[in-house]
Length: 510
Image (tube, rainbow, N blue to C red; front, side, top):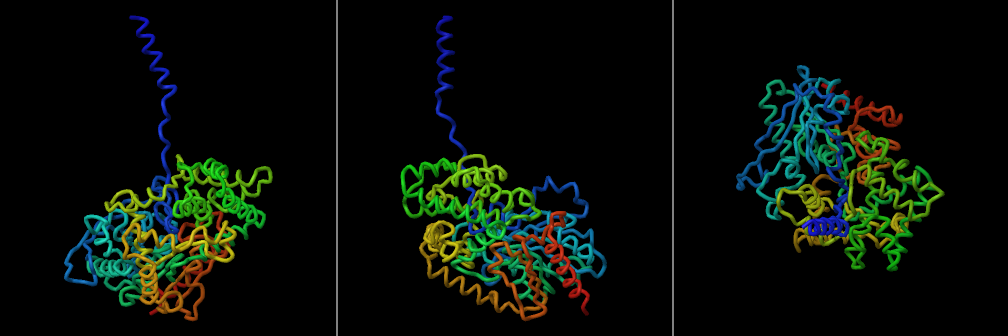
């Protein structure tokens, strides 16, 4: 009997030794049309900031919103989440409304002291509000996200949501009967803030639209041009090394041994497939850390303040003369994953991604499915390598064409969402809002950082003295929205002061 027990124990031990290792977690880290995980308007974890918040004055609620503002026969409503805080309010003060964008909202923007909006609220005696965008976060207007329901997801509907909300809050709180409302937003919601002022000047007195891409564009080739330029202005040696890295990747893709090297260097879950869509999805994975770091470099939003900066996350490795080109690429990749706590292998399964995006439930794919829908039906914003300058710098002009993204619209939502439909929708968006050149409504502030790739679609100059672009040297996406930091450049400090002064002048005008 003892021998049997010993043999069984031995067998058990051997089975543990030789058992197949558990499959590594697959990480899909790619930015989706310029949108990182969690949304483009970055917020630090609430656990980091909650000790500074006066929760006694922060109120959360839901508002009964109309499902279709353009067709009364639909006759349906839904519950829209919102937050408000009157801790800075003074009699006769304005009302500030933060518009939610392509991600969940929280109490952060109305409660955390020291942010641009809350600083301005304290100065102006404002009551602050924040509404969550339909189809994002917990604001779920329909039973699912099927194409037949996604027709209710658009910027135009969101603007009418804001208008209905302003009317309701004005009626609910008598103190606000004569308040001047100012819309705020960042990134997509920065454009929304400006557009809401333009579409409803009778309700919205002024707008501050930070990093708002007010020009829709199918082939957004300028995005990677700005990434290239932003890295180059940090260090020309670094830029030379980065482009050498991308061109080495292009070369290694041509051989079996080269593709094996790339799988190891980028810690890929799968072998690199040579079919067209899989190769392009691989390139998305390779570009993504560089794009995201540049987009938020130096923002006072968690890890982007000091860790995920161009200097620290890219050039620190690319300027190291002691490592090979492929090692530099690997180090950037590994560091980006480490800081973001992406523990696992990088998933480059294109078909798996499409299946993920076709999930019509309000599940894990919710925000990605919603945002891609908006790019397919309104904005484009497809970050391509079509640029004659940036394309070769990133390893080839054909690596990531706009058509690749349009084909994803078709694969995810159906044959009706094709090249012609996307172009028609983008043209309509620019006609409906005026685009960059015909946005002419007064009292709109438009801050943009000039290392932010999205600033290429912003309104950077104006002949109208009451439309005020604020171009901020050396700063990234939505940088002005965060609290002042000892790391801030004089340019950012001066820009926040200009925003404050201009808004103060508008609000004091009779």
